[in-house]
Length: 593
Image 1: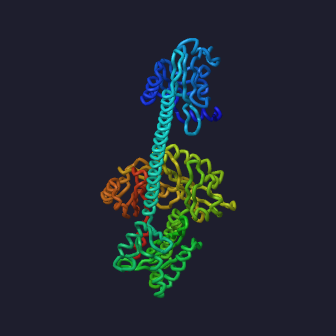
Image 2: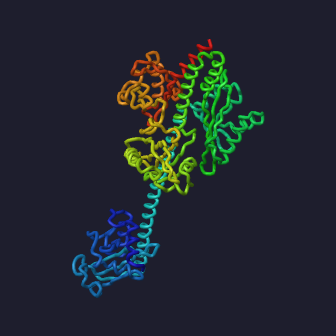
């Protein structure tokens, strides 16, 4: 027989001790008593200190001390153990179970030997008078013992099957929730990209467009008449379109082809920038295109960001024309146009830094903050390979003076106080140099709403870092107007750029009705769009021009768009002050007349 520690471990695995009575075991014990003609039949199991009865016929007790148990001897025997007269057996004659009730005289016990060789207990019959079993009774008792073993094996198999089924159900639920969490995160990122005024497209390694934002799609649809422009949506091959232009002798097509081929082969194209003209709907427009690339596994992708600079180019051309005919007024007009030009450039640089020219350093981390994966832009930002990043605590990349603030924001997210957080902080590169980044962190939650992973987007804002970007993450980063509203139109939060334009402190605006700040003639249309967004109509995210009144009572001309916030209970409003641009346009039209 195997050692006692292993036998007790096997008994624990079968989980039979102290379980309720079961008909299958009681039936076997009853048949054993009738077969052997004894008043008592037991199915017993022996743990370290006691003998416990799963079934007991003719005996009221459910257990006895192991030191008194006949079965303790039976499990050590080589076959069925039979004691014809306990009073004549020196092993048992002084046993309390022999001397006192139930006054055992006769005992026959068959070990319950499991397939792995461990003997967990016995099937035994007991009489109060001496006797012996004949051969048929012994054979029948041993057959019944084998039935007890089969019942135990069946019971264990059913329990293990149920556990496996439960584990499979839990794993399936966990995977389903992860899929839903990833879908929510992707939808959030798509909504942010769609809110950008720049035209954004992502192409795969063959140059085929796999994703475009709303601004790109609207421009392509509006220019479908031209054929070449209208077809450049998802599924079209942008690289082949550039090659066709290059073969036709277009030098912009040549430059774009070389740059895009380089990006898709892994070259650093972060410094690439190309200005080019394009025929829009009824007019000629100008754009500047920038490139970035990233990899997912073995697949490489490129991000194209097209920024409409028509207003700037037309303004420059108009300045040149006016300078030829209005020399007496050239100095004043030049100052106006340079001011408008610089204002537009500054606004573009600030807004462009939010998406890092359509590139973003991206990393995922466990609930504990250990980096699980990082994209090429993150590795480039850090200045080292993947092995130097994955597995490290993401807070190790943060300057020590900024960690306490990041800890507080992260703790609020883990405690369900916030869906995520945005923040500006100092990023420590592998070479020890510091880069200022804007970090946006979102939580991926399981079915119990517990955070299982976090996603972090980092944008390098070092070149555009100026004094007004001191704190408060995403909102403080932008020079454009940002506001969060609930779907009743109540302002919940504004950024400093919005506060400066209104001439009010952020605390004075929070809680006010957004429509109160608009010109009366603009309120109905704004209210209609907000209401449609609340009902889930994403077509109401188009740009719209409104007039906003500041503290001095002046109206500023604002172009704004809105998109639902990830929690679906609020919306993000993005606005750009177009007053100076509109004034310049009106002055230019007046001069042209």
